[in-house]
Image (tube, rainbow, N blue to C red):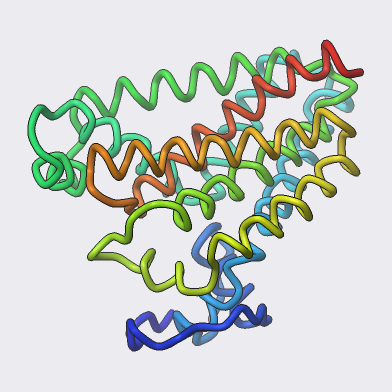
Length: 263
């Protein structure tokens, strides 16, 4: 993809096939042999959560085969689904979690933490953070009642991608990377509209618990954006990736609670 474009050019919200293909290529292992500009991706950034629905649909098919056709245990199904999703998304968001974990371990100012987070090597903080995130994800996904498993896999990927763009919109701009360019395709007002639309989609998928999952993903994005601004001075691509992974956990835990009390 061609990402060398003018930074200051105003980008309008106008989803396109090219923009969708760029986001799919950026978010998954699906190859897109097509020239996509950063402006096209930025103008289509509002549909990023719906790419999450696509990823979730593939995960849901795997969950159905594993749990309902092959009779695998809930834990093995959770491992297969989670493993497939982080592989299919190119481990990009997992890398963000680990980089953020390394950065948070550092004592010093924002610039020092940011430098460590951008370092390509992985330290103890990153490994430990990923272990915690993966363990909680598997434990939460295993705890979902089997009759709601398919809807849950759909929702958790939808919610995680929504959290990612929430953190991008709310947080301070990074001086490096393409996040600041993509951000030009969305603002807080559009985000608020998306909260309403995506909450309705969450309701259609799983009723009131689905709405709770979407709202929790927004709260996760808001919190991580605030944390990143305080600890690193800005929201980077790594923070966006970490928001994706952490929002998945939060939405799963919220779903477990909501399914117990609202269904």
